[in-house]
Image (cartoon, rainbow, N blue to C red):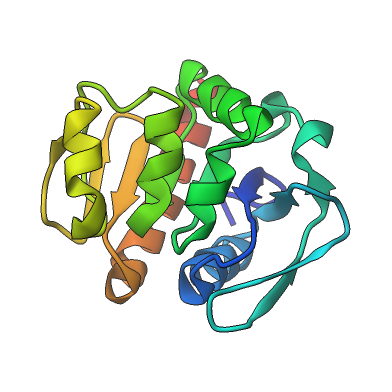
Amino acid sequence: MELTGTKVLAFVDEEFEDLEMWYPVLRLRESGVVVDIVGPKAKTVYHGKYGVPITTDYAFDEVKSSDYIGLYVPGGWAPDKLRRYPDVIRLTQEFHAAVKPIAQICHAGWVLISAKIVKGYTMTSTPGIRDDLENAGATWLDEEVVVDRNIISGRRPPDLPAFSKRFVDELIQFNKQQEK
């Protein structure tokens, strides 16, 4: 597998959208990626909107963006919490500055907005945060997945197959570019 042994960081907090957390994480792991789940506290169980649990590997302040090839931010209500942590903003900005793939879906655009990295990008999201993205300077499209440079964005759970496949494809492309 082209991604075996590579690492992706995935943010989490309470009330993530269960499918938007687990579907991409499992798809990445099936592709050989090591996915580290990172939240406010290490070795802590967080619950999705529908009660599905996930346990963090590390806390935000314990990880370095340089150890990862990509960042994943799930949707749900967690992004509204995530964007309030200075370490989440710092890490997101570091991934962006390094032009590493950043995948976000549904309400996760809030994290990228708070990190001030969406201006001039074309993105999608749940229609509920369309105004937020546009007010932050992004162009919004109503499509299942949109890729603009290093940002991969998705709308909502029914779009997870296309979104997750595209994230894996973008990570493969990033790896190939790094090998040159």
